[in-house]
Length: 254
Length: 273
Image (cartoon, rainbow over all chains, first blue to last red; front, side, top):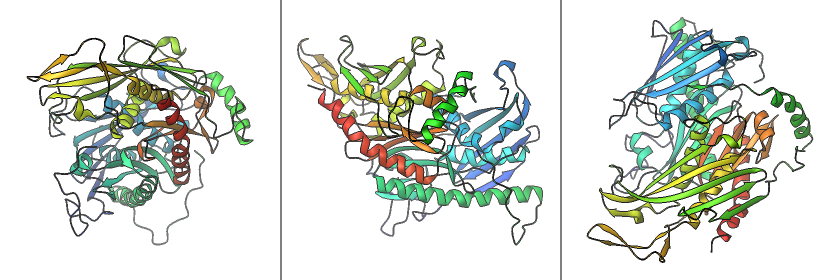
């Protein structure tokens, strides 16, 4: 994490640089199915993050030798547009983007019933159009909706949100400046119904208690984002909200 | 693009053996679930490097070397030296490693080790600045995986730490923003402030075991690496694998990592003369 000091990240009322409380999410806007050619797509605005996710598949594996006999191969590419950051980012995939592609795939793959599509691939593309901290989590939130939009059977939607530590306090959903000047960042992806964490990374410095507190805070936020994801799907597919919700589908073991 | 990997047929056969043992609280190599394999660390094995460490973690072998050179600082940190961590999975270490550019696994490993060193502020990078914006020392940490029997992240993290704490560079003065080296005999250590140690646990069949060997890694559902510093603060974490953890399991893994890291950190520091 960067240096502390120059910027006051928490004011005397405990409010943050952008006026949020420590446990308050940035505004989240979701849209499903906005791309024509992709089998599934979704767009997320999370704070000033603007991220597009597209899914192709299940489709025939190409090249063929990558195909698996018992399940679909899931492939993932996380990529940032050259104009998405303050300084221009080279369009060539960086080491960071390669790592994030891997951890994002590992967060989403547990939710996909890939065993229904042996020898096929499911390709997942995440393009960050504007980055404002928390792109991997927002990317996961959008990509999970894109998978649902593609009609790929999912065990559950995956929601992403980061928590962290800023100005000595555990806070939710770091903004760009908080990420750069803060003390720690803890990105989380979570499936609420099964209570499972699929992505967990951390950098910075936190005590054991702070870390556990941040984990709980991030998970609560993922539950909120999960409800927004469901609402976005209802909007797209014009599903009326059922007052007394139907019983859940039987649990499928991961 | 990041893609699902095929589990080797042998791993599939071993899956049952490993699972049957884990359910009974046993392991292939007769360790308990929270036992770490014996760690051996030798410092300074490569004389031409500024620092080096050879780590044996069970049968896993990792060599790390540190080289210090002059370079240009990054524009956003003009008064700080530079740390770069790179990992090579050399083909002699495993039948599954291939020569060529680093794949996502070696990039992930290098970045997790890098985060531990960087975020714990193990190196005082301000002390590596010679002329702000123009000239700084660059510390290259190169990790060489020589024999892959599981838990490469921990072995690599401890090898990198060992190489850094044992590193010596030629003593120098700064005259007119230039580095003037003193005579060959005078050596100084790197400015080291902290000692990050990564500890990895894996989940197999709902059980958590520490320090997986290769067979366990191949059948694991997922892993979680927790890097802690000398003050028992957590400075980096990384989950990997296609499985998922419950929040309770994560908290358990964090507590285990904090308690296990103390002895290992002591062991590495005690080797430095």
